[in-house]
Image 1 (cartoon, rainbow over the protein chains, first blue to last red):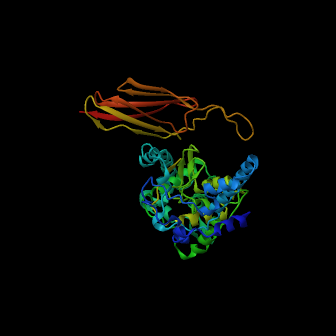
Image 2 (tube, helix red, strand yellow):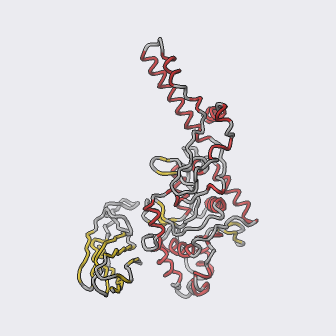
Image 3 (cartoon, one colour):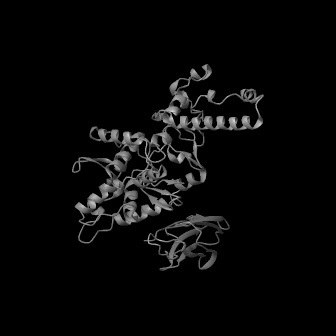
Length: 329
Length: 106
């Protein structure tokens, strides 16, 4: 099945298209950075698969009508199938830096306005919660502020470099894990559970201090091997649908998956408020949702694979400004 | 903890139409859902929102289970005189939440 699709893709395109070359598919964004411009939706499969209309008619001449009808249907079915397989099978290419767009650029104007207005952005409720927790000391211990002082100063830029390499674990850890480590080691308090209101609120509060700053995670030498592991995971087909992350988010961004636009998967606003969830959620939750969507076994919260993927995605979005707390549909 | 964000213009001209935006954190649990053990999750929504301008009620809304979590309510009123705009959300469980914002009318 896969081979068939691949072969179909290798049929040489007609001369007029061949001049565009392999990488020409998305090379002219047509104002790709403007908010509502959709990238050109050129077919990945060359048109020869679909016969010109007149040839179908000729093909059917002289045959009994029923035979012609079913043959046409079968032919169209195969052509459609190959088109689908082919479009999913295009080689994964990373999105050029100047064509990268935040998920916010794919949203409706109303949702963008909700994110931009701090008095309408429901993520700001979590920021307020986080601020209270930052100043709230667990029994017998100092509060976060007791050591770190004013978060606006001490936490500025921190979220932009997470997941970051951790000496104790000899591997990168994400911001949630870092906060929980501080909590268990320095505050001697039980860690917050994944996706609890408290952990999301503290993470959102810390990350909000870096809003507008460029992402730098994954650019240091020690993180490189883990970025590469994340890249492998991102490109690995998985689940019953046999899809990799890259097949949607590198190859088919800007198109629609049912009613929703496929974004480029830049984690610029986590933890974020998802209208679908009616709550805040972490990047790990988002990754698990996508894994569920392709009907694959989900990695557990905090699994090394999850953090490697987070790290790769942050590195892939390097230089893009953080938006936490983002709003997404 | 319940957090509320209120946006009332600090200053307005007399007779001006002003927009007031409010956002409050609340799960708005519908009462129609079940937990993982099959037990029904009891309804817990904010059922009433009231705005008072210097004690006089200027806006009221009844909320129902179909309203999403963290309800965002905006409304317009006329700036008549300087004073306080008091906003009250009343949930099924727990105490009503009240926030007050001051406005100066010139």
